[in-house]
Image (cartoon, rainbow, N blue to C red):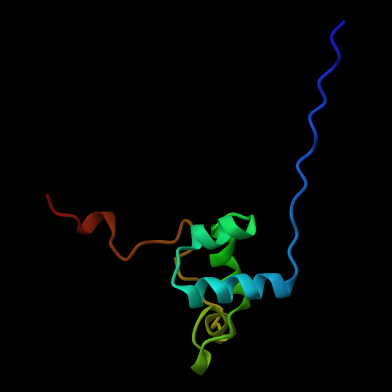
Length: 95
């Protein structure tokens, strides 16, 4: 008789902050490609870029996404409301 095949569930690897910081520092200071450093450490190279963005200190001068979200909003929509009349009327068109 055939036994049912039960596939094992993939377990997601979790890395602590110190590991992430060390990996990013090694990558940036070594001058090697992210794929090389990540392969040595056992994770996908895309993680290094994500960790660098997440762990990097905010840029000086308050620029970046955080500064944009903190800007005051005047409450006006950027686009006219649906069904709003246009400034060009149907009678002004010339053929």
